[in-house]
Image (cartoon, rainbow, N blue to C red; front, side, top):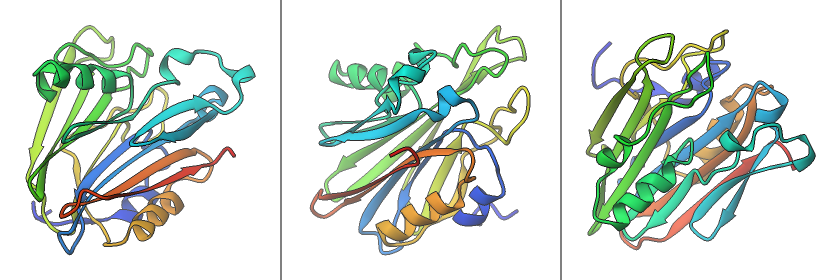
Amino acid sequence: MNVYETLPLDKTLSENSYPGRGILIGLTPDGENAVVAYFIMGRSENSRNRIFVQDIDDVTIYPFDESKVEDPSLIIYSPVRALDNYLIVTNGDQTDTIYNALKEGGTFADALKTRCFEPDAPNYTPRISGMLTFEGDGFTYQMSILKSADPMGTACNRYTFDYAPVRGVAHFLHTYNGDGDPIPTFTGEPERLAIGGKIDEVADTIWQSLNEDNKVSLFVRFIELATGETETRLFNKNY
């Protein structure tokens, strides 16, 4: 594969029945909008019992039916938080770890050195994170994955990727390579995908391409670089 090749967004998602939780960050083909997306999927009733709720710039995950909650610790968290010129998106409460570190003058990478993969043996779900940093009329972005170094969860490996945005390109990082028992952890670098130029095109493509049985919720935001204005779309299978 050519290192500059981009994969089709719909095909990449539709061919994986269980990517788990996924983060996508990139730039529209016209160079006018930063793009960020986050989705969750679930196989168990506890995992599927969730909805996204927006509060101004932030997004929080809540149980759809509180009576069915078995373990709230890995269910209820804020995957999206904004702070000054930063936008943070993660698949767990490390959102708050990064947010608090930035407030104290720390960095994305240093904050994540204090965290590890999720304690859900035998899967040891990776913690995936992304952050957009806006400066002037441009931005850069970082992505990270924290995952188990072995099948027993005895150590944590941490990988951080720094990107300059390229028109029409997004990087896609997800927790799993596919379904299984235990579920196989994501491997390699974030995938390089081609994205469209309109928010509804991108949001609808992601939502329609995710496995119908396993998809739960989706967040997509466009940030206009010239003005800082935002557009957001939320999809919840439970409503």
